Amino acid sequence: MRTSPNRLLATVFGAVYLLVGIVGFFVTSGIGFFATEGRNLIVFEVNPLHNIIHLAIGAALLLAGLGSVTAAKTANSTVGAVYLLVGIVGLFLTSSALNIIALNGADNVLHLASALVLLAVGLSQDRTVAARTA
Image 1 (tube, rainbow, N blue to C red):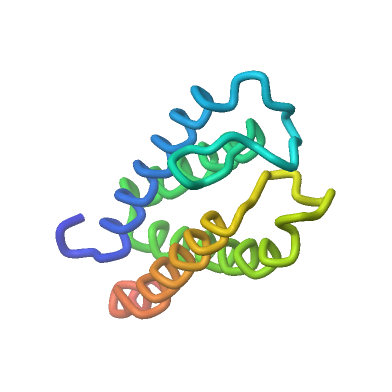
Image 2 (cartoon, helix red, strand yellow):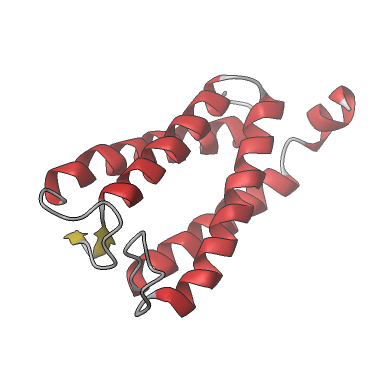
């Protein structure tokens, strides 16, 4: 893991998103599963569905980071692309009935920042390993 930026990033981001998913359940008691307005976890709005998504993404990244370089590279690129989409779409959903994961402005900024970091590392690092396994 020390020699692979993708494995390190996937492991760290995975652990953080797992932690956020778990802690999120402590603040969303009494909130509807698909509530368009959640409770604040620091400055980020979350609802139970948002917490489950954080758990799933955290687990996927952590498992990939603890696995192979190829798995970590794929997970970083895939999650980065999804977060880019969520960040962009979230800009239009924050005050909509379609906002089933209770996104707010801070969530959108975090998703876009996560996307940039995950995509930058996923698409640019560990090229020699990917070339050898392809």
